[in-house]
Amino acid sequence: MDKLKMHSPNLVESNIEKIAALFPNCVTEAQGENGELKKAIDFDLLKQELSQVLVEGEQERYRLDWVGKKQSILTANAPIAKTLRPCREESVNFDTTENLFIEGDNLEALKLLQENYLGKVKMIYIDPPYNTGNDFIYDDDFAESTDAFFEKSHQIDEDGNRLIANTESNGRFHSDWLSMVYSRLKLARNLLSDDGSILISIDDNEQENLKKICDEVFGSKNFINQFVWKKNSSGKTVSKQFPTNIEYVLMYSKNFLAHKFNVVYKPLSEATLKMYNKDDNDGRGKYRLYPLQKTGGAGPETTYDYVDNNGKVWPCPAKGWRMNKEKLKKLENDGRLEFGNSTLSEKAYWNERDSEGKVADTLWDDIDEGNVGTAEVSKLFGFVAFNHPKPTGLLKRIIELGTDQDSIILDFYSGSSTTADAVFQINMKDQGQRKILLVQIPEDIDVHSEMYKNGYKTIAEISKERIRRAGKKILTDNAGKEGIENLDIGFRVLKIDSTNMKEVYYTPDAFKQADMLDLADHIKSDRTSEDLLFQVMLDWGLELSLPIERKTIAGKEVFYVAGNSLIACFDELTFDVVDEVTKDHPLRFVSAEKAIHLDHDKTNIKERFKQLSPDTEVKFL
Image (cartoon, one colour):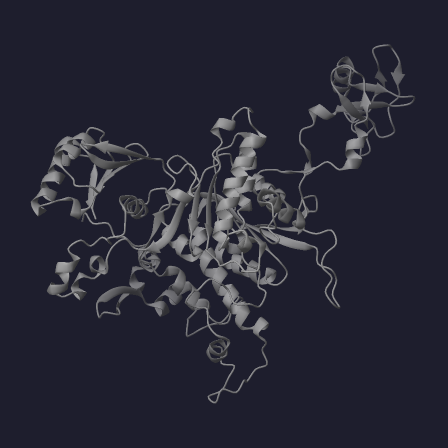
């Protein structure tokens, strides 16, 4: 089989194969939509295999249910015949950057990335739209009208009369929000590395439901923490309610046993900084004093009278010293003892601190407030370009907590691209090579907003422009600094679109012979060679950020992806091109059938590869 399948993986088929490996007796056959037989699962048998008691029917158990949950699972697992089309003109450093910006619905994006980034993402951060009781812009199959919701949830009778008092905010909109998030989290989990983690921003409206969903998707044992972020010092006053000035960040690991997170620190308070107020002018800088008498129980090695180098005896404190005699003498010999009137103290120098502060706990009250995020973006654009974006301070805390210097970071609700801005700043700080993978739907901007008045029509346009401006700013602010030349502030824009292939490619049996004459070329006429290249990369499971080099060989355009990992030629494929390409011994080579004049040439080209580069995998579109 030398054809590429050109659609996202069918997760149902994959899951059936996994179950079949464990319980082959539970696999049966069912009739598909077109009458063909397909593998299916006998769920009654599977239930019995997983139960120690006789299973007679649906059993009550502790779980979160809502109208549309099963549909959201079906939606998440269903394959799509779509692709990602490159957009050079909106990108920065397209050929060399390792950062990606995908424009389109994130459910479709997550499906398209299932093979390419399976188990490769170290950290996912998302800030999903909070449930405000309004319709969502994500047009999933499970989104429905209020009337349809009441009917499906059995809240109206045959005559349309409501049976249960249920407001929209308590019913339909909760169900729509839960379904939207649930399907996306199920797909996102597959992309996490075994030692990876996901962090999710949320407010009070859906916090408890989100935690239950995450317990189900990631496993309750993989819950790490819930952080409380103080977003506003004053809070918005609501009638008969307390002002709200906090939000939450939920953190789950992919595998609790494999997961390791970094220790991050809260900055020292002003009061603590003022304690470092002494200076001996010995080149060591400012220091503070720590008394050396012990406050807890004493042991024999810390209960002694200390004799200093001048012969003075310092009587043992009531509970002993904080260290043994040898360590105390070492401090004195190194000039680190302060001799008081009645006790000894250790000099702790500012420049020798082990950290930048104290270890951060679950209360994040030291991060820039939420309105600073608005100011950050407004400063870049010169106008209020986004309402209430998360501040980079919050994202930098999250990134430092959950990533290594070469991690892939996924944010599939990109919004104003705060994640990208924060990653650039941290990479500049520690010379890291973290890579971003952002997804944003081209949501229309309110025509009355400052963004629209300044020429931006969608949120995705604002997202991309912020990355461009943040990258330029960081280069300007750090001009001349070591490592600035290695900082990747570029991004490759890919847009979700229909497949590059005509319908005949998937269902040739549905076309009559007369129609086939007009469909001799099964590739759509408006698609470029680079469009085909990225569909091939998707289908072959290659990372979409791999470097691309375009060469001219024997007068034809040839693409080299990551050296010789993949070589592609969609121009007329001659034996001169094949002979040159085989010298590089590519791991994979792909072309299109339209690039070959005669059918037997396809066989001859394959034979040529077998002779000159036998390990090359050759396929055709």
